[in-house]
Length: 251
Image (cartoon, rainbow, N blue to C red; front, side, top):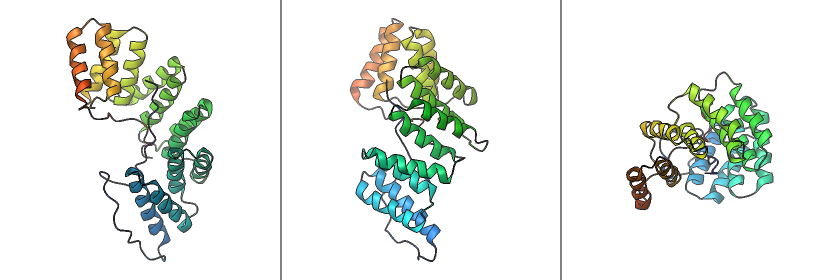
């Protein structure tokens, strides 16, 4: 269960991911709009796994607007995926220097630092994201902070963040699942089942990771029938990936 929420960027995009539109960009007399469209195209190509083309679009966005904080942030995400950590951090740093109160950008940088084992620095960025009174989804940053601590061996601190997230949004599925995990690891299977049931009531589908947790909870309670049901779901391979908390949310 040591899975940090995957870096996800949904900046400036509405609806589902689709194939990139034709590269018909506006005249250079409107560089701001051109930069935004290049950013959109770059994100779409990233979703399709066409990283080289995505890199070209994102770099072009910065050619049009060198201080485009969102483009720097997405480039950070892309370079992190490509394993070019120095370049990733350079762009993350630049993005938050341009927009120091942008919670979504701070959140993504924090995720990167946590994956690098720099927990205290990551926590500072998550908390800075929370300082923004216009951040409408603080449960995301709180859950990411909790996951960062949990994944690096501090379950108590992780739990404190998850409880804060659930105090704000009692139905936030990723935090409920993490609380089920912590409860199960502590041998508190009845409590774990309560969190798991709340998770399922949100409508969030199971993924293999959550199903394995559900199986362990059912076995811990001696409920062989429930364990068998989850095992069948796991073998079927049909569950879709459950939503994760990594997206920076909206200010």
